Amino acid sequence: MRTKIVAGNWKMNLDVRASQTLAQEISMFVEKMETPHTRVIIAPTYTNLYPVYHHTKLDHRIEVAAQNMHQAKNGAFTGEISAEMLLSIGIKTVILGHSERRQYFNETDEALAAKMLTILNNNMEAIFCFGEVLEDRKSGNHFKVVESQLKNGLFHLSANDWKSIVLAYEPVWAIGTGETASPEQAQEMHAFIRTVISAQYGAEVADSVSILYGGSVKASNAAEIFSQPDVDGGLIGGAALVAEDFAKIIQGTL
Image 1 (cartoon, one colour):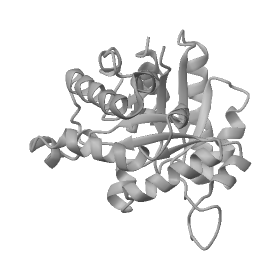
Image 2: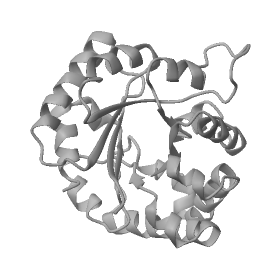
Image 3: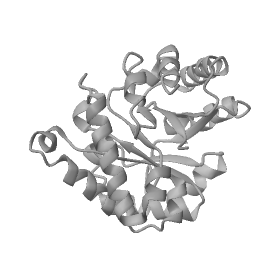
Image 4: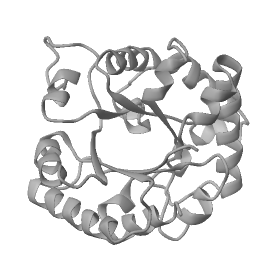
């Protein structure tokens, strides 16, 4: 059975004190929940990674992830963070290829392919993001775009490497816009993603990888979206900044 996952991407929000407080509030909610098999991941900004990790490390239900990582081991890359730096503070999971990184920082499929090799070489895990913009959806090009992003970013890896990958499908047109793909649209794309993976790596790999939905998931729609057979949880943005809302979304994996 695939692992259910709810990951909160805090983006560029909250100072260190507010981050610790939110992590503690989420931890208190999760402790009371009957969702023992759902992984709960939170991704604070870089400056708050260690304080939040240190604050939650005794709570085995809450994992802490980074929002990005550079592919090089070290060097003259001002403002970047390496795998070794993340591992040194206990961080083993990294969000890669988020639509905002692709859009605002020109992150390419080629760069992400290199980052994936660094992730694997360091025995880390990636939450690999991809998805189409509104123009692609309207033109009917969305399946082709998603297939291309998957192949360019991940298909240089071996079947065994997929044990270290979580996928996050982001319909970019449904992020921060108030728009949300219908549960049926989410299921259609997630099923397509498994078909693409199966054609390259076989049904066993395709059926075992967790695929998260990342498009304006809220407490009010989480259960319906997560009930789709190929949707294994969510990558949550704004709603992850409110502990009670995030907790209700986690509850939606039941």
